[in-house]
Length: 84
Image 1 (tube, rainbow, N blue to C red):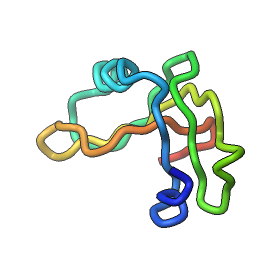
Image 2: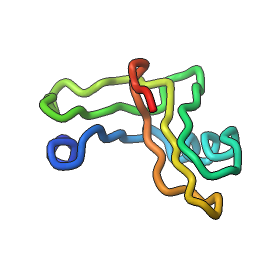
Image 3: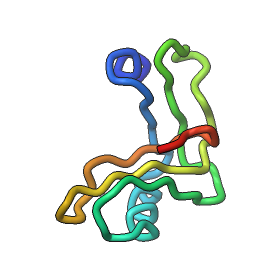
Image 4: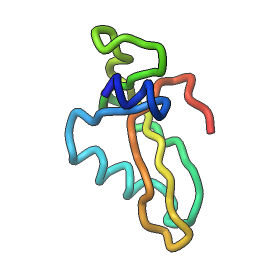
């Protein structure tokens, strides 16, 4: 994941696949970019220039992007400082 963050920017890794489903369900079904708070640890993040040995742990928020047809383009855990 750290190598991917170096190449593409911030990356997130879910702790449990069920949280991806919950995030999708609490996000409006309309096209756009959203940050949703789940109120509990859902994953960890990796930053460009960061360390694989020291990722952002226990992220409680997720970024989700929907395509024009409302389907999910991407979704991943993010830290508290993440903005759209």
